[in-house]
Image (cartoon, rainbow, N blue to C red; front, side, top):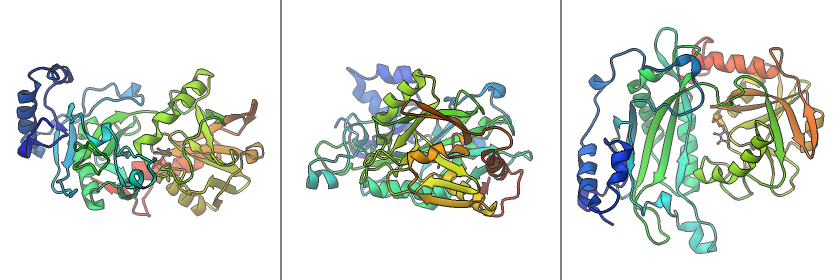
Length: 403
Ligand SMILES: *Cc1c(COP(=O)(O)O)cnc(C)c1O
């Protein structure tokens, strides 16, 4: 470990550009690394220093789903006991991270010591969005749900976690500080990305000694390059996203790299994304790489039950409630891949995609097609959900947090 005393905070915001950060790695890195850490820790950003302009200089009409970093990020570093106290806003920038950080190596010991097999990389992420209302206020959709899910995930991979109040407060602070990066109403949203990671240095199999909770933001448009065009999914029966008893039910960073190959292959063949099956029977639907799936037949909407292998989306949960309110019968159960042949509509849900209609699903060489367009149930549910999120429809459920 190269750093000492109070400066052993292994992950903090750096005020330097990434290029200068990388040039420090090597001979002589030690001193500047230290002083940089200390000076940036002292750099607390106060509301009076936020940008004054109403809007950042962004081409709002051509937003995709890429990173356009907003000015500020929020960082809260745990104590050695894993307690989160006061966090702070700082300028968005590169991080200093110990090469021995738990998240870069391996994580928690509990499982590994007993089974000798399972090793968890300690990293979780979350995602929510801020909408700019016509009156200029910002609206964030159900951040408490993201906070609870992060808690659940942290528990699953044995990390301490900020409280729900700390999480929601941090989301509010960082959203407000980056307000000028929130697109005009109707042009997009500001994606808010919380992370929690084992950032303390660790050599053997033991809990990481420190954890970092961080949030950064980026204005975004549509997730899929198809925009609002319906999706064409490919059912994968070789690669699996999650297994029984694994961590597919939490937003652990370990769940994403393993499916990149399946996604790349599907995209290479002209599909939008991959629909995964359960790894035991290879017969029941699970979800798409980063969104949940719903199947409509008549007035019945079915979605795979959350039994630990699928991520319990906040959008999924909200759509289940909205669809029930609209008089649909909603079933959370095992949905067999054969049922796809009978479905009228299929759609995906997630913070990034919203509610996206599926035009086709290809399974074992056979392409099934579904109803899409303005008259679909998916579109009806999407309009209600977006209406609530953007403030156009009155929020009777207490879902929207106004800042
Ligand atoms: C984030 C995510 C979802 C969607 O969750 P929301 O809370 O609705 O954004 C669905 N599936 C996976 C695998 C995810 O990572």
